[in-house]
Length: 277
Image 1 (cartoon, helix red, strand yellow):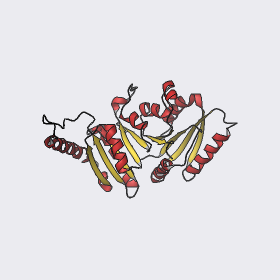
Image 2 (cartoon, one colour):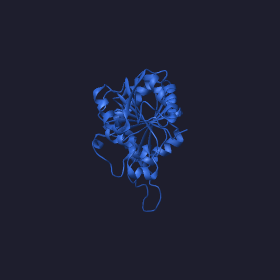
Image 3 (cartoon, helix red, strand yellow):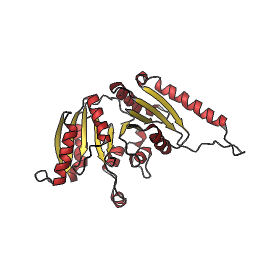
Image 4 (cartoon, helix red, strand yellow):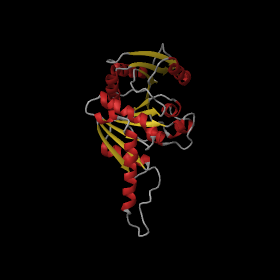
C-alpha cells in the first residue's frame, strides 16, 4: 500500500505520522511519502529574474531540519519505506502533483485543533482535498492519542455503494486492524426499501462479509444527531463515510455529509469516495 501524508512542519503533524506508522506496521510492503508544501508565496527570483538557488537550498535545509525534529520521537516510521518530499508549491497543488507521480492508495491528513468548532467560509486544505481527489482520505484530529482502531462506525445512506478500489482499501484496513463495523444507515422506510436500496445493501453486505458487523437503522432526517449520539455512547475509534460529490445546485443548498463530518467530528474519519470507478 502507498500512503501520502501531507503535513505542516510542526507538532500538529505527529498524530498523522503515528497513524501512518501503525498502518505501515500492520500492512506489509507499505511505502509512505511525507509531503510538505510551502503554502505561501516563495521568493525564488532575484532582481535579475533568475532562480536564486541559495534561497531554495536554505528552505530545503530548514524543512529537513524541522522534519527530523518531528519524526525523531516516532521510531515506528522506520519500519516502512519512507520518503520526505518538501515541495516548492502551495499545499493543494503539491498534494495533487504528488498524487499523479506517487499514485497513493490512501491519503492521511491532520485536522488541527484550530479548526475545532469552526465553520470554514472559504474552506481549508482538508475540505479542498475532500472535494478534489478521489482516493480514500483518513483525517486524524490533532488531539488524537489512540490509533489502534477496534470499533468503526460506517455511515451509509443506501443510495449507492460501489465495490471499487476505495472499498478494497477499506477492506485492507479492516483486516489489518480487525475492527468491528457498526453500520449506521439512513433511510425513509425500513419496512419497504426500494429496489435500489436492496441492491446497494447486497453490495455492502458482500463487502463486509469477512468483517464482524451489525446494522443500525436511523431515519434520514435524524441521521446527524443520531450519529453524534452513537459516537458518544459507544467506544468508537473510527468513523467511515461514503462520499459522493454534490452538483452545483446541491452545494448551494448545503454542504455534503462528508464536509460536515470533516469539520465537526473530532474522531479519526475515513472518507471513501464513491465517484471513483
